[in-house]
Structure formats: structure tokens, C-alpha cells
Image (cartoon, rainbow, N blue to C red; front, side, top):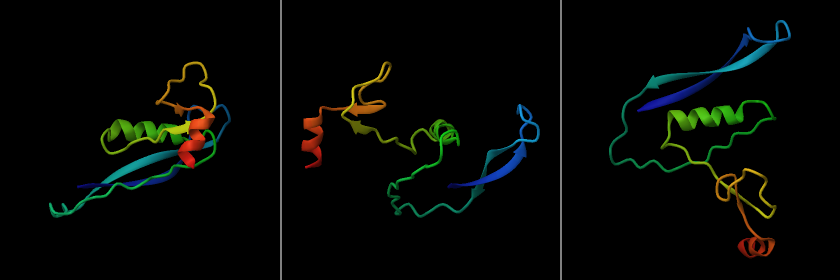
Length: 106
């Protein structure tokens, strides 16, 4: 089994418009460890990624989904607002009527 260890390191960005601006790059290193006994059951756990706009949350999620397509799932929230152009029910949000939302949380 492979365990992922994420480390942040500061590097100087070569494409920056501002000289000497520092950016953070994610480095993923793999560490091999012994396999667990076949009787061990791994329960799913929630992972919450939080950070300010532009911090790379979406980029990290996209890379994790690409690298491990069966290991992660993305939650889809419910909302009572109308869909915006290009949004699809069940993809960005589950769009529901306010009365239906109130029934779901009652």
C-alpha cells in the first residue's frame, strides 16, 4: 500500500510578473509500507479542503481525482437558488424548491 505525504515548499516563480514573488508548489512523495492484513476493512473518511480564493483548492482536487479516480468522491450541495447559465442539476448543485428543502431539513 502506498501512503501519500504532502509537503509545501517555497520556490521562486519563473513566470511571475513581480520579481522575486514566491509561490508554493505541492510536492507529493510516496512511501512504501507493509500491506495490511486482508481482513482489515478501511472505512471512508471525509476530507475537507479549505482555503482562500486562489489558494489552489480546485487544482488540488482535480489532481487528486485524476491520480486516484476511485478513491475520492465529491459532495454535491443542495440549493434553492435558480441555476446559472451552464450549471447542470446534480453536477454543481442539486437545485430544489424552497418548500422541498424545508421538508428535507425538517
